[in-house]
Image (tube, rainbow, N blue to C red; front, side, top):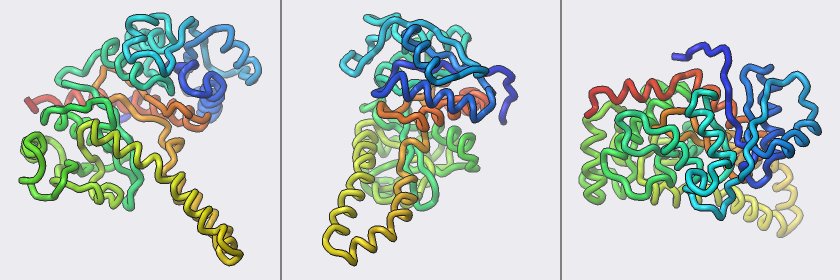
Length: 339
């Protein structure tokens, strides 16, 4: 159920990402304009730099504030830097605002490890959740699929995988309006006897749990859309994610190579351009914006380091929707009686 919230405040890590602060500010402004100031943006970062960026963007009448943070977490910093060495970083300051209820959500295209660790340690875990998780969205023949975990937890126990399935089901149902989403356990075969001991024990938990479990699925079943939610440990999930990210560029290169051979092929390529763009659009991270950190006491969205303004805008809109739909409350309610 969606809750009416009159004044939602979203922290935006203005210094996070390869093209910050320009792309971050541009995307946030687009979100505010598109929604007619439906929420307030709290830009966190170097105050003078942000003032200059916003001045150039002509943001008169838009609902935003600047919160100064002198430090920046870069990709060479350890994931714990925001908690130890750089407590005045945009990630640490922004997450603390959320923790102190001065904001309702946090969005960043910066250091994903730092965002994950600060989300977990500053916001804390939802009661009953052993490990928070991040997912990845895959286009399928049937629509979309959420894969959990995508790299946050490389070693998982069966009860962690069950928690991922539960949180993924709730997120998919609420955010994508899919009633009773199906859950598949990624394995090397469909039979319940297949896989290692962890997979077999996870199968038993899912079979008697509060999710619409359809059994084991194999790698070839993901893009077929056999399950709305696919569960695996982060080691496997991250390999799948990185492989999938390489597919669009591979197809573009192969297509370019094919059509360069002769004139008839070039004509075919020109005719296929629009179709190819439409097909590849479904694999574009910009459309999904970012991925949520599920299992923490708050709303935290992690975006791609190369996020465009469009991706930033969609991250912010996703954060707002998660707040309005009380995703964490639904997770907490679903956990009651599962242990």
